[in-house]
Length: 146
Image (tube, rainbow, N blue to C red; front, side):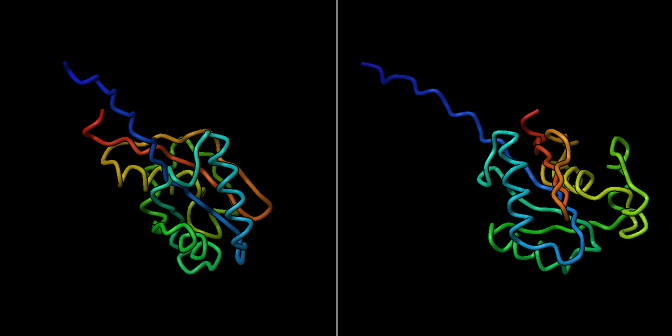
């Protein structure tokens, strides 16, 4: 008697989070914002494979603590590395003057997802905000699954 065919489970959606924040933004605020952003897309931290921010925030305690809590790498990009990902993103003059990039969360998410997937990534939903931080999610699409 043949064994029943078991359908293969669909691969879990893998996403990265791009994060921007004001100086000294706390871990709790960043964590809550990230969890709410994921939940809005019916995702959890189990779907996350990385965090991204701008080089200017490389030593930001809240971002480092979040990466540590989640056991995920924090990848930081220079403003020049983010330039190709700014085209469809709404930037702000204050962000540009502070970081050298007109936007942080969305282009960081797109840059990391593109790097990890090997092809153009796409944002999931819009950027979310808290009092001191922004978060954007990008879906990783791998070349071999297109």
